[in-house]
Length: 215
Ligand code: AMP
Image (tube, rainbow, N blue to C red; front, top):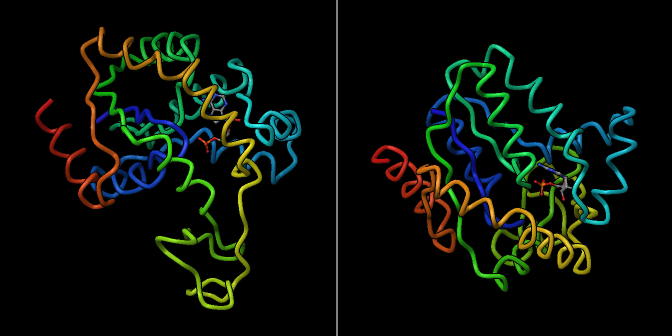
């Protein structure tokens, strides 16, 4: 199964990609996660990417296309993969088409998760992560312990730098301008599957799985 997950920031791509990884036993390829690792490691690419990411801008196409091209060639992608957060622009989608053609692979489906803007902002502003074990929280929907620490390991919770309200609004605008048009592109390619991302996480998962199996 070779899938793209499309959706605005906060639509649940990361959460659903992680569940699909288990279900189909294929890797999740998250350009956001790979870039955050590069930033943490202070690699030359991470140093370049950091400013774009912290202000909610997109990292240049050539950089992300390079990461994805390398990643898709690894052995664990031979049976399939879930692209989470890539492509985000038409040039990225065009580059992906070329890379897949070079590798003699074809996409099966592009899942678009639909979530209202107000819900997206509420999800992102409340999002926290344990600095020690990586467990995800939401201040309202999955609150941490009473003292604000991680319920699993007692670690300190952190907020992503790009989850501040101004940066979130910038990310939403960029999504509308540059990424949302990809829906029409993939619809015209006969690949688009639209799923309501406002429902509970396990229900969204089930709906994605059945949509993929019947597509
Ligand atoms: P995400 O974790 O998918 O929300 O991505 C976090 C940030 O990483 C984005 O706001 C961008 O700055 C950068 N990023 C992730 N994926 C891409 C991509 N496909 N193209 C450009 N920038 C990206």
